Amino acid sequence: MEHRLPIRIAVSGCLLGEAVRYDGGHRRSSYVTDALGGVFELVSECPEVGIGLGVPRPKVRLERSGNVARLLGSRDEDLTPLMDGYARQAATTFDAARVAGIVLKSRSPSCGMGDVKLHEDGAVVAENGTGIFASRLAADLPEAPRISEADLESPARRDHWLTRVFALAELRELSADPPDAARLYDFHARWKMVLMAHSERTARRLGRFLAGTRGGRHALPRYRKAFLAGLAEPASAGTHHNALLHLAGHLRKPLDPAVRDRLGGEIAAFLAGEIPLAAPVRSLAAWAKRLGVRSLADQAYLAERPRPLGYREAIYRE
Ligand code: SF4
Figure (tube, rainbow, N blue to C red):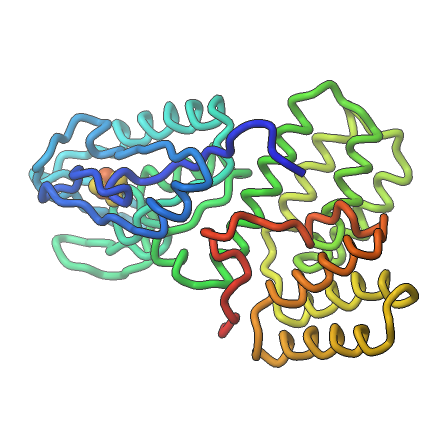
């Protein structure tokens, strides 16, 4: 399905090459600017500039006290309420702008997620903190998938994040229109195999849920929440292998046995870590189109995504 509206991604401004870091520098990520920027509409945000700290500025830090992390300035002033309030506003703005994904700078006391240095009395005591801005976005925008520029370098994590972005963008379009049971069933049919690769349990549960409801206004919010939670679970080579075999099953009858064997070999090669997921997916999509297999015609699992993203193009090593 073509998206009717541009897909928007919020990004830490320094990753876009903007000179907004404390030292007047940036941390431009070419994957973010070139690949994501060529496909999505990027929305820049630097929360430390946003709260008025200026450029250049003294470094801020995360200070741990008990279970709570606070953002402290260079003179130990507590910037937490200011940053938290700013992040609340940003979350509201991102939501109104239909942001479908967020890329945040790793290790930053504002933007970092799970890898930020935590201080106690001037000493670093751990490196697993989450910045105040990132924490608030996670709480107020739980649906929008978040990733750091560091995790974008992992093919499996990047593909997972992109899958969630495409799904949320499509769900947002579905939710924007008047509720319509048929469109919700269509969505489920399109995305079921993707969901199966991430959470078979959720896919089956939602299938039963839709069969037992007349869909529409009341079904959509419950469906949406459960679907996105299931999709947030990581897939593995094994679960993708199961999905590929299932999709290939739709081609069993119309395919010539020699082609069927070749396709089976490609699927096995993916499981063995010899070729990327994109290879068997493209073969399945091409044969489904050539043979006019209606049940596979509109499958999100087989959808061609813009090539610059490198979606499913690398071999998973983790
Ligand atoms: S990490 Fe966040 S707060 Fe720091 S410069 Fe980049 S965008 Fe600004």
